[in-house]
Every structure is written in structure tokens, then in C-alpha cells.
Amino acid sequence: MDKTARRSSTTASIKHLPESIIIWDILVHLPTKDVLRCRAVCKSWRRWTSTRDFALAHHQRQPLLPLIQHFEEEFERYWDFEKWCDDGPRFMVLRNHNLFPIVRCSTPGGAKLKVHGACDGFLLISYTDTSCLQERHRHFYYVCNPATRQSTGLNWQLTDFIQVVGFYGHSSGEYRVLYCLPMEHSKTESVDGKLLEFSTVAEAELVEYYILTLGSNEPRCLGGPPPETLPSLYGVWIGLEGYFKAPVLYRGCLHWGSDSTYFSVFDTVAETFRSMLSPSHQLVTDLFLLETKGHLDLCAASVGVTVMELWVLQDYEAELWNLKFKIGLLSVVAPPWRDKVLESSSTRTLRAVVLGDNELLVQVRGRMLLCDTAGRLRNVKPDKGNHTLQIAWHWYRESMVPPPVMQPAFPVMQSPFLLGV
Image (cartoon, rainbow, N blue to C red):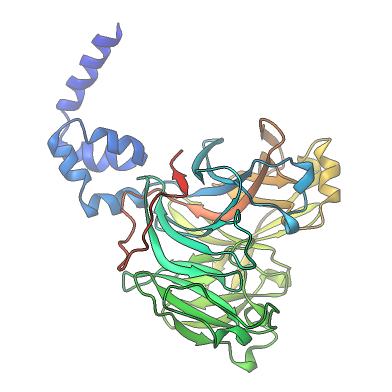
């Protein structure tokens, strides 16, 4: 049967299907790129797939994909990620064992691109122009949807003193940014959209937290945690991490992994901090969500030099954890990368995350390895050239919903990055 005959047979089969089945059982499961193409088939398909109900249903059925950062620099030069160079990076997602780029700088060199959060298919991105010789660089923030290739600039310019630690959707329907600022600088902060100026560049030991609602230029100060929360909330006092250790939004709360026996939790409704005990008093290096059979579990990974343990939260209120599996990384990683595992003393050079029920993605000094949870190596992700790959700790789920419109919007002459590339 030639292509024309097969196409005619397929068209005839589709015509006999009820439109509700085509829309809600077929199209709703397709990637955004394919759905947008299907809109050209007929007016009814375009009308149905343009509704918000379809966009929300489509978003819920898309897989949860890990975000991978790719560097154009030589691997051996930047193996120490505590001092890495993030000039000219690109961000990709791992889907079906393949890497697909979703964001990259439009011009190579002289710029830094960071993803500070992922929520409902949107990415909070900061772009920093480092080509100009200034003591303090300006950070321009954007909310973008890589699936639809849409972005909007925020009327919000910040300096290096401010650290974004969370990006989340509120129950009110608003999108909010949680950030912290050293206390000695907080009183001199400007909120009129201009560059913030400080009297000193020295970092304070304690920080205050602020919430900024997208579309507003007036952040609200939450202050710091109460003194009685020390030492369980020590990480909150000195400033949470939102880039190397991204938080996980679970049950309306942001959760941060920690190198102590406690990890920090922020209730986005009550806007208060609290702590949770790590599983079996293990040192939890990273937290992430594990999607199994349509259900999301909060997982804690303890990644040592040679062993990874994965704990699944069975009872959230009682803080009861269950050890799902334990893998010896030396039995998974073959030479010459086995020696690299032993040399890795930082969680920024050795990371691992679970994909689905029985697959593990391991990062060893900028290279990605895929194996099953029994420790059997299933696939190795080759990388062309001396490039560095880094698990970004953000999870991305495609969405057809356009990014929120900012009022007033930041004037952007040309987007500094490319989406869906």
C-alpha cells in the first residue's frame, strides 16, 4: 500500500470516530507541538483545543521531564561546579532517552542564563548581560512557555545580592516569586523597577524573605524565621538555595533538600516556614518528585560518593519515609567514569534522579548515565564534543497556556533567548 492509500485509509478511520474521542482521548495526550499542528486540520479541532479546559487537561497528561543544563565549555576545565562558568548555556529536557533543547541564549558569549523555577509549564528565567564592565550586573527576568515559544518580561531588575529561592502558583491563581535578601541590604532596596543600590558588597549572615506577585512591583517582606526555629531552620536563616538545590512544590508547600538532618518547608498559603525530619536521620542531598501511575510522591535522595538511597514519603503528616531502593554507584558506572565517581566529593559533580518506576539518571562529572533501579546499566547518553551536562533539579511539564501578562510589562526590544529550539 502506497503512502496515498494509507493516508486515505487513516483519514477515513478518523472520520468515523466521535469528535469527543478524538479531542479528549487522542489529542489531549499528544505533545504541544503536535496539537498545534492538528489545529490546522479543521475548525472544530482548532476551537476545542483552544479552550482553557483542554489546555489544563492536556497539561495534566504530559510527562514530568527533568531539566538538563548544557554548557559549551570544555568539560575538564569546569568539572568543579561550585566555580562553574554558565556563559552561553542551553537548557534541555530528557524525553524517551533523548535530549531536546527548550531554551538557549540567542547570542553566544557575554551573557548568563539561569532557570530559577518551573511551574505549570512556565519557566522563570534570568538573563544577565556580562559583556559590559560594571561592578554590579543587571538581571532581567522573564516568564516563558517553551512549548508555545511565548515569553513576557518582568518589570523587575535586581543585582547579585538578591537570591530567588522559589517560583510557584498560588491558590488565588497568581504566580509568585519567593526571594531572600541580606538584612543589612534590605532597608536600602528599591522597588520602583530600577537597579538596586547598596552601601556595601559584604554579605550578611542572616536574610529576610520577600514575596513578589507577578504583575506587581511591590514585594511584601516576610521577615526571617522566629528565633526558636534554630537549629532546625538554620538553612532558612542563612538563605535557602534556589538554583543548585531547587525546591519542590508538593501539597501547596515548597521543600528544599538539605545537608543536615532537617530540610526546610515553606507553606505558600500560610506563608510560614517549618522544618521536616529527613528519613531515618539521613543526610538528604536532594528532593524531587517521582511520578508513578499518575501519582506524585515526594522523594529524598541521599547521594554519597559511592551509594545512592531513594526514600519515598509514605505519610506526609506523620513524616514517615520508606526506603525504596539503594544502589552502589561503583557497580553501575563502568571505567573510566568509575574513577570519576571516587573523585567526586560534591553533589554538584555527582547527582542522580529517578525517572518513572525503574530508571535512574546518574550525573558523573558532567556526563549522563542511564540505568535501572537494580543497578544494571541500560544506556549511556553520549555527548558530542567536550561538553558538560548538569541535572538542573527543575522538572518541566508541557503546557499550552500562554504566560501571564504583566502590567506594566518590561519593554523588550528583542528576546535574549530562543525557546523550543
